[in-house]
Each structure stands twice: as C-alpha cells, then as structure tokens.
Amino acid sequence: MATIGELLMNGTARLRASGSESARLDTELLLGWAIGAERTAVIAHPEWIAGVGAAMVYEDALVRREAGEPVAYIRGLKEFHGLAFSVDNRALIPRPETELLVSEAEREVARRLTSAPRPAGTPPLRIVDVGTGSGAVAIALAALLRKRRMLLEVTILAVDRSAEALSLARENAVAHAVADAVTFAESDILSAAEAPFDLVLANLPYISSGEIEGLPVAASFEPRLALDGGPDGLAIIRRLLKALPGALADGGAAQLEIGFDQGPAVQAAVASLPGEWTCRIQPDLSGRPRLAHVERATIAGRSGAS
Image 1 (cartoon, rainbow, N blue to C red):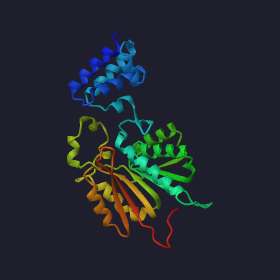
Image 2 (image 1 turned 90 degrees about the vertical axis):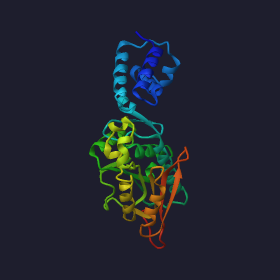
Image 3 (image 1 turned 180 degrees about the horizontal axis):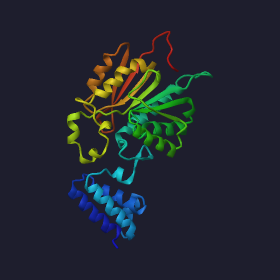
C-alpha cells in the first residue's frame, strides 16, 4: 500500500502531464476527499498509509480530473464564503470572485437597515438574486444576515430559468438551514408580478459566445447556459438592466458581477435607462473591475417598496 506522500507525488505528476494548471492543489484536495481528511492533514502527514478503498476512490478521481472534470464536481462540493455548497453539473461552480458580490450585498443591506430608524410596521427589505444557480449568493447572504440578527428584516427571493439549478439551490438551502428564509422560483430575469425590490443581485453569464470554446476544458463540464452571455457577453445583463425601471423601488439598488472589460458598456446601458440612475464600477481584490453598483434615485413624494 502506498503512503500519502507517494500518492501525492504520483497524482501531481499525472495531473501536470494532463494540463492542469493547479496540479498539486488538485491532488491534495482529491486525496483528502478520498481518505476523508482535511487537505492540511494530507500535507502534514505524508507518511500515512492510504487504505485500499481510499486509494481506489483516489485513482478514479484522478482519472476524471485527467479528463478535465472540475475538482468541485468530482468532490461534489465547493467552498464559498466560508460555507460548503453541494455542486454538480446542474449549475455553475461558485467562483471566489463572486464572494465580493455577497460581501457588498451584506454591507448594503446593513446600511439600509441601520442608517435611519425603521418604525414599527415597516415592510422588510425585498431582495432578489437573479440567476441563482446553486443558490450560493442568496444562501451565503442569508447566513450572514442571520449572524447579524437581520434576517427577519428582509425577504430573499432567488430565481433562475433552470429548474435543475433550482433543485440544487433548494438542497443547499436546506443544508444550511435557510430554506425558510429564501424563496426559490423559476423565472427568466424578473417578472412584473415579483417586483418591486429594494436590492437586486445578479451573477449572470458574461462570457461572450466566441470565447466559450477557448475556456479551460473544465468549463465544458458546466452548463453552457450559465456561461454564455451572447455575442459581447452582455446580452443577458442588458436584459436585466432594461428590467430595472419596473423592478426596483425608488432608491433601490442593483449589484451585478461583470467581466473586467465590461464596465464602460454597462455604464452606458444604465445611462440610457429612463429616470435618474447612477452606476459605479468596483474592482475586486486583484484590482480588476468586477462589480457594477446601480442605484435608482429617490423621487420626492413617491415611496418605494420599503
């Protein structure tokens, strides 16, 4: 029987030869999953002996990864904003960069709930996550608001046009004990019956159709529906922006994840909306434009949803 160190060395060489750009990390994650240990334990104890059963599970995982399948799909989970989400090919794998959307949404909700006194009987803030996929954004936000004792002051709706993605999102909501705090609905963008909202969140497809085939092979295992943003990557985002006048309450805001080169086009689309709007582009931790903050002006004498 092989040691952990030997399995790591062999697996890393195989994945590197297959083209993995993160061969060592992939190997550590897969071996830890196969033996039921944290990655840190795998690194710290190369002398451990792997059992026959674990070694077989690990071998199968290596074969799948050599074929390009994402590590997250092989393991069946992905860590996102401190939570472990079940993932499979029903939905896009949550990306680390999307954690910024959750953090900014939490900040925006807290600002709206604490910046001024909220008289008794004030309706809860209405939040919608458009294109929820695995439910990562809505569920992570609900978990954060629960910790801050703010969850009872909001309603969260998560929509997606894929019934399969919604089934995965519901499973994740149950796993993180927020199934009673997040409502899921099958919807293409937003319907007038669901509006108005105080906060719209979205991580919609923003990769141009022509770039899809050039993505790493792992992306070919994910639903194309969750990646393809049309000819310039902004077809679906523009549809959401056009829906905002009927979807956002006065003074409402939308936060949208975008591609690093799409800021000017998104700002131009916002500028063309009827009424008064502002659009600010926020960079991520690497300094690349990542999040579009869109806000609707409050019209004197007219109240919004909250």
